[in-house]
Image (cartoon, rainbow, N blue to C red):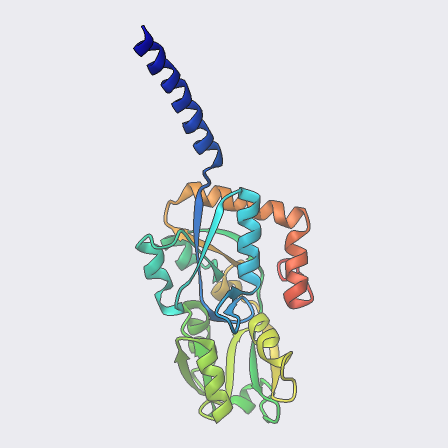
Amino acid sequence: MKVQKLLMILGVVGIFVLAAQSASAKDTLKVGMDPLFEPFSFQTPDGELTGFDFEISNALCKVMDVTCDIQAVAGNGMSAALQAGQIDVLINTFAMTKERLEKFTMVGPYIRPTFRLITNANSSIDGSEASLKGKALGVETAPAIGKYSRDKFAQFMTVQPYGQINDAILDLNTGRVDAVFGDENQLYYGYVKKQPDVYKMVGPSVNDPEYFGTGQGFMLRKNEHNWAERLKTALDTIVQNGEYDKISHKWFGRNILNN
């Protein structure tokens, strides 16, 4: 009888322990982002990740009440890391194009971007075909930007692809390319705003849905519905409660979703 009572007591205690563990345990969302993608995701001098995408990711995790495991992933290894299950979602300005939507589950848009040319401040390039003819253009190897550049620029200038936009800017500095085409938010706030005497934006802002889709979103493995639904609800929440606007104004001085 005493043994039975003891077992009953231990069983009840075990139930409470399991319940407490269950209540305290949190899901973990593994987020991947490029550490060389200022101002969206980059490292501080002490090696800590920061940036717009970093803060948005933490805001989403807070709403979902999950642990945010944000990992630095090299730009050219992102898709492989996602497909291998090393991360659950890429939050790093991925265009919601038709081709990408066929291969991945996407949530968004969380950014509606524009694309533009950046040159040295003393350049004679004004964005017109005449000023670009015969010149060298640096572009990131992102599919949408690469395709647009090949279709729109390659017939009258040399298009040079780069794995990182930073490398294209370095070659702009040394004269290996004459201009760089990329995300206007990134180029303006990462370079022109910081060094207006060194860089300038030229030509029109481009937002062609045929190439760049309806905006930029979070990218997950195909048919990953659980995290997709939770992220969609969390995104709607931070947009409605003003947290998105607060983060966007901190980094860009404007709302880059409703611009």
